[in-house]
Image 1: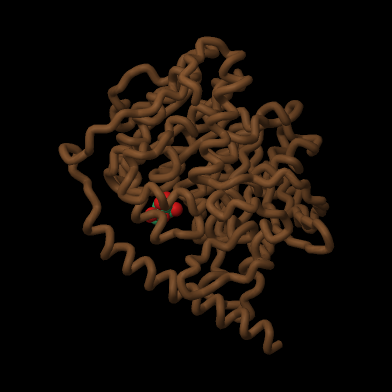
Image 2: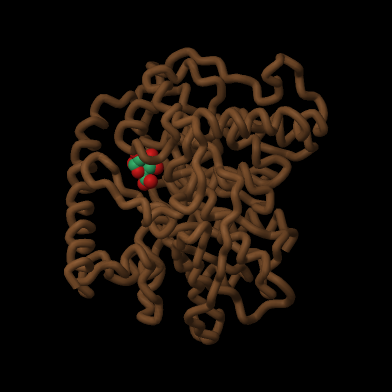
Length: 429
Ligand code: GCU
């Protein structure tokens, strides 16, 4: 009893701390550049020139040499190294509703129990797949921010383990359906897709370690060895990306899922993780970044909106430590985020922004997409060919997609509709 109360008090303290951090963050945001005329001159490194200066002109050279050079560079300098050691994973359907959404879907809750060397870690997925289907269906895999119970108001949904620790059962954090607008599940089902989501806190609690130190046991990475080089140790984004791949491990075994039609999707910080997951795990055929900004789809070298100094200070638990070397030194980065996007080729990438989300630098997100194009084109794909952003409300739906929506930082039904159209096109549905 006492232990549970302690945990509860800790979580409340953390929430207060997060609010305080948010307040400081907004104060610091005042020193951020939003003026396009103050963007420094910058030169983007070429994704198609190898570290030894060789130009990549064939798919073979890209796949044999350059792709892995870029993966290594990003592991070492920004996201940290993903361990190769394997976890044991047991997945158990702990609840099922074959009549969800008025009979349109089967919903399941799946408990993932990861184990290695005597340690265990649990995370809970919420799954919806269409009942009315011919054959296997494509699947969206992505995290939610506030627990599975934020996706729907349905009382049947169990609390994600991270939130289930709260003793006070009518706590604000346990309110249901608080992020329903981000998850148009019925639309996704009606369009013939499945969706699998999990709370990212279950995999690595997103707690700023300034004062509250989350216990190691709460992180999936606690089960895995870390690299000796402290500068390239993975942190939250690396572990979240890894968690997305563990969700994919389960999805590909399901009789209703088309393992060749997996899409990974993420909003904002979860978009950063989705991109890194999509870069590493080639099972994801479509990789979707929604307003992922700095450290996601946006170019860092433009130093407009959120920058490396801000992000590594405010969220020291997201990237590997080496990334802080580029605080106020974006010009020294040996890569930029177009390298990350290029790793998705020859699969399909979609990068979306919102007009009022200047913090995430919509133009920088678009330019990174544009500058990743040569790698998609090496495969004969039609990427994003114009340096001009699409008009607000008009989307680019080539082999690579992009749109800029009117409005603020969010993932809305409008965005999902664009993603569904894009996936229909990619999967020829
Ligand atoms: C903060 C952070 C961003 C992040 C965003 C989010 O604004 O600075 O980098 O993308 O939170 O995840 O909502």
